[in-house]
Each structure stands twice: as C-alpha cells, then as structure tokens.
Length: 77
Image (cartoon, rainbow, N blue to C red; front, side, top):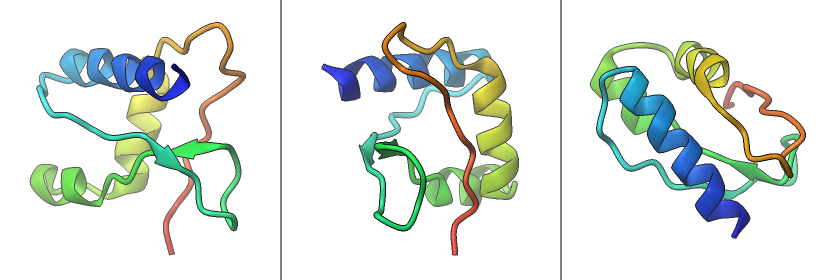
C-alpha cells in the first residue's frame, strides 16, 4: 500500500516534469534515512542531470500521501 501510493505520487510528479517513466520505490538502505527510497541514477543518465538535482525537483513536486511524513533527498555514495 505505501509503495504503491509513493509510486503514484512519483508518477504524477514526473508527469509534471514532462516525463512518463516508471520509477520503483524500494526499501531504503540501512545507512540512509527513511523507510523507502527511489534510485535515480538511470533517470539522471537519461536527463543528463545529477541525481541530487532531480531529487530536489521531485521533492518540490511530490504530493505525498497523508501517511507519509516527508520526502528527504539523499545523495548517493
């Protein structure tokens, strides 16, 4: 339920950016904050933009489900 709701919110945010791409929500790695995450490396390669910049833009466009506290852009290492 949570993953599906997050994926739908991501799909809508991507549509606002003019993109129709499926992004999969996954469990966040133990060394990262939060419960879920979205790998953006493939999208970054396609858009030729850094993943962190895409994450920040997505955060600004996301309409989070009421049971999600916040979205936190996290840089990968």
